[in-house]
Image (cartoon, rainbow, N blue to C red; front, top):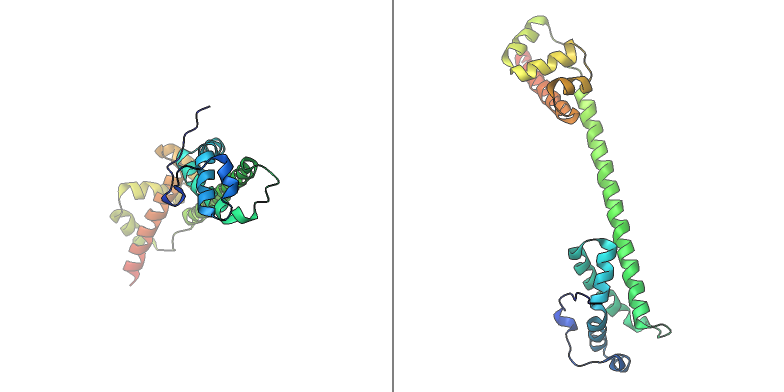
Amino acid sequence: MQYLRPTEPVLLHTEGLSKKNVKSCKTDNTLQISALYREYAGMVFQKCVSMLNDPVLAQDAVQEIFTKIFLNLEGFRHDAKHSSWIFSITSNYCIDLIRKSKRQAAKLSRTLEAAQLLTDEAASEPLPEMDVAQLKKIMESISDDDKDLLVMKYQEDLPIREIAARLDKSESAVKMQLMRARNRARKMHFAMAS
């Protein structure tokens, strides 16, 4: 099986070590990690690609995994093969990345839901009380789109879903337009009052 090999970092680049030499260079972690990198980087990369489904993310993961290996090389007890130890670190690292990604996606989803709730609340917020003359003056000075939207919402008392269907727009677009139209009308009302 042919493995793709990620680009070797300068720190890990050393020539001429065989499998036998890996054990003999315990005192020189740089040489040992270089030998391990040359031997296992391609397989680690393939494992990362298969777990993460993203070659760019896998490339970064390989570098992080070999950094972890380098930092923990002294703790390797030699009661297992290097390959088993490295693939265990690889699997755990990728699983952690996947979990972190899911947590971030869940957090983003909660943030978007909260923003949607704020938009929903803002869309249903009533206009300030005003007399007929003020209302007529404001309605004459706003755009036809704002006027139609405000009439559908406050005079016809249509739900957002129905307004969106009539205007052939998404509900979120209607909510945003309604909020902006209401804010413009509110500003005009306060400008008239002062």
